Length: 260
Ligand SMILES: NC(=O)c1ccc[n+]([C@@H]2O[C@H](COP(=O)([O-])OP(=O)(O)OC[C@H]3O[C@@H](n4cnc5c(N)ncnc54)[C@H](O)[C@@H]3O)[C@@H](O)[C@H]2O)c1
Image (cartoon, rainbow, N blue to C red; front, top):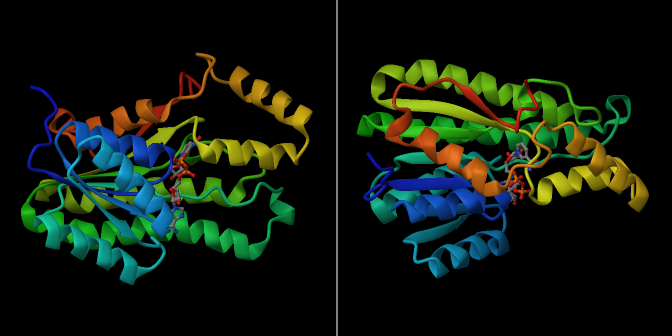
């Protein structure tokens, strides 16, 4: 059996970012129609242009995943265009500021939780009814290695990714008998704009500190490198496909051995 998403519809949030774009392109390569969702017109258009250049059947939606009306609008757009939603890649996320917990601004804490937890919650809340009505569907939430361990100076991000696993497990239990699966991926460092923003934040603008920090972080990965966005996309696509038909409620690691 080959992974073949012909006739299936996928919605990807954060589609203009590193992992979101990689998974959108891979879904399209395997036959899915893709709704590329991102928070700005520029990000959504950029994803759409790259999808169409690759020959995909795709649409773009501008939506802030923190806002219920925006989530309802992307669901409606997918249904209007193609009549179903088979796959949701609930992937949009934000690292927040890189600061010690005791100095962490309360309003930034709220923002990180809103994007990473409420955004995932709203995606589940409004897409799962569509999948349940179809009797078929798969959701993949993007959690993190930070869903399992602490991360210095990223308290809200770490808390938010632990919460994503809680949402994943609970949603999976609630729809397990309805033909719908819900899983999460837990990547270690991935070579995307987000990891670069985290590293620059941790280095505090000092180029030497940045080099040292990168070397230190790489040394923590047993296979000695960051994941590519494509590698994470391959795991996400596996979890969205019938190849993983008995896997639900899991947070699957992808980190070159860093959690071993
Ligand atoms: N890069 C890493 O090392 C890494 C590791 C583990 C987990 N992750 C997770 O992977 C996911 C994708 O991150 P990435 O590495 O591709 O980063 P990225 O910054 O390249 O992409 C994140 C995307 O989310 C979008 N986004 C942010 N806030 C949004 C909002 N309110 N509404 C709609 N879209 C919004 C951004 O515009 C961007 O396109 C995130 O959930 C992130 O936490 C990343």
